[in-house]
Amino acid sequence: MPLDTLDLRWDSWDGEEDTVLVLVNGTPLVDLVRRWENVAAQATGERSLAGSYAGLPARFAAEIQTAWVGGSGGRVTLLGCECGEPGCWPLLARIETDGREVRWLDFQQPYRAVGSAKGWSYEGFGPFVFGRAAYVRAVRSLARASTDS
Image 1 (cartoon, rainbow, N blue to C red):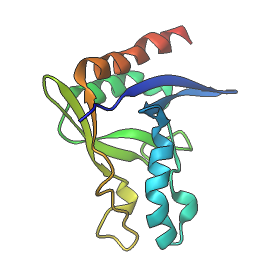
Image 2 (image 1 turned 120 degrees about the horizontal axis):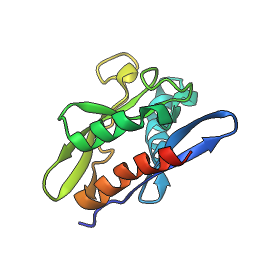
Image 3 (image 1 turned 180 degrees about the vertical axis):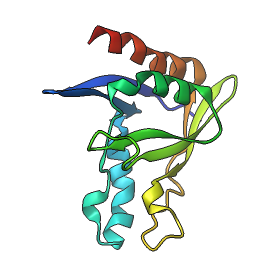
Image 4 (image 1 turned 90 degrees about the horizontal axis):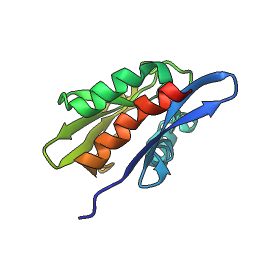
């Protein structure tokens, strides 16, 4: 099975703090998630909430590098809320690493957890599997780019 690709860039907004643009296989992760969430959001009458994410703000660059490369086994924030506060409406995933690969799996929107009245299932979304060396380079590139701004 071919590996997925990860590209991370700083996205600039006029007068706003830069945020991380996450591209998986060349497509913004926000777009991939929006397409997935649309079905569940429509079923609960909350279609405007589907894909209501933004990249994480630049001030979290060090935390992103630690969480995304560390492979803690717990879920970490991949996208935050459009308001700029990552904990307000986060997209979470578990990141697993081994010597050769990094996997993003077990996605969750904690405010729409399965089992709640308005639960959204991410079963079948992902996993995304990246080559470890390329993945680490992509995540580490955030540090270099954030010092250039």
